[in-house]
Length: 233
Length: 173
Image 1 (cartoon, rainbow over the protein chains, first blue to last red):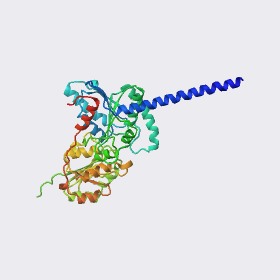
Image 2: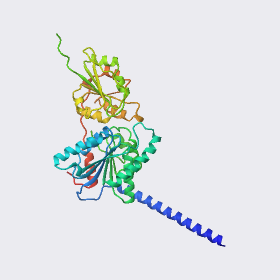
Image 3: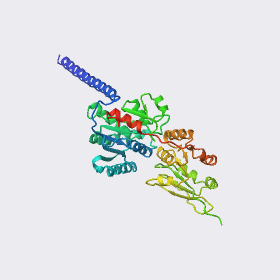
Image 4: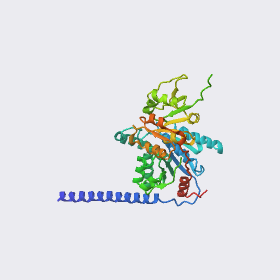
């Protein structure tokens, strides 16, 4: 008889555990759908309070395009600015620093108050096989998590380098968990005429970018949820 | 007695990449003879992270050839050149087009998924530059007519800035 009672008890507790797990999973699923739904819609804010901004830089043309975009944004709205570049990218942060220095001397402010510069481990080097990239992406993700916990930006600007994926995924998770609501703006590189980059494709398919901008009309036809903005360069 | 030849520089750039195939292609005697015949006097190669070292050369009868790895700003080299031969990276392409210089873009076929050819081909279709591979570079130089190139009108980041501002609820400027 005791054996019978024991069996009853364990089956009750295991079904309770199963129901709890199912409940939590459904809750997370609903929350994710809600986050995706809200992400696509413009923010409700009316104020002109500045928003902390994370700017993700990538080698070569990526940084050139990003700085070109930044030139058009009012700096007193997007502030403080956090620049992140890949650990092996030596030139991008220098270029960003040049921009911030000239800005600081124009406005009479100190760069350290308005901008910070950081490096993050790279998910994938150019030419690296996709298989080893899985492991390096995991390491990069942990490092990115550390940085994102410190920064928790309200706005993220990125335009394609692989470095942006771990950061954007973490930002999305922060949204789901209610840690920080980041508006993610992805501008696909002007070099992408017929197809989206891997980063762009991931953010598009997973509905993770609040707004995904493309510079050539062909891409708008292929990816209807994207916003066509013409050439930036 | 013969006046001095005007200095006409061809600037070759691979940006921040490694593109040995391009450096090798311009290191060829036949290609350099062709450039000399077209009136160029100097060949300056920015070889980036490549490992192939081209041969330097001097003298009145040859193309004067020199190379370096990186420069903090290649804009000055572009400005003083008469023709640019560049890898297909968008940074180099638009920097050159903005400065109004004739450009031959060479696509690196060793890159994974080779997306760079899309931009080079698109701009070549619109006659803003010539597009080639390391193998077809010589023929492209033989056939090129730089006067047929159409000037590139720069794009504008204002639309995307407007979208971002509106999305965030900032008032229009």
